[in-house]
Image (cartoon, rainbow, N blue to C red; front, top):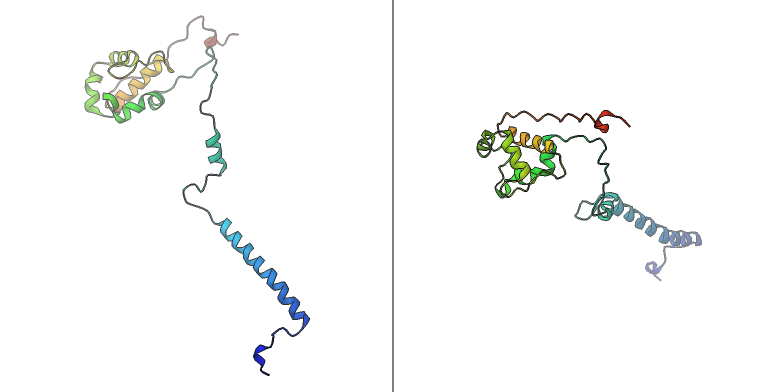
Length: 176
């Protein structure tokens, strides 16, 4: 008889060792593969779709209602802030004939007309620009935005002063 058909397992102890290794080694390999697959960061599109920020962005309300006390204290915005929030859409890109911010050639004839004419155009509307008076911003804030835009194009207009509170204004006096 030849030795080629003989089993390499000769004792029951070897048989038990082989059976245990047959179960343990694949489990260890599968565990290592799972750890490798889940520990590497994903960089592709949609990889962060289940992150807290992405989920919060998807479920946030479409509109937010902000209640403000009309008689409460209010801080006036700077000309640059009003420009960014209200005027920037058209004046940054020059849409609908609006002079672009910093374009000295387009602003020069307008600056020559003076602050009052520029403010009047902004408050009452001019061309495709809707009137800004009576909107989200006080007239003085619109005036600050006009000065900001004119000065960015080489003008030297002074910023309008804050209005003095009225003598009977309780909010300004701090009275109860």
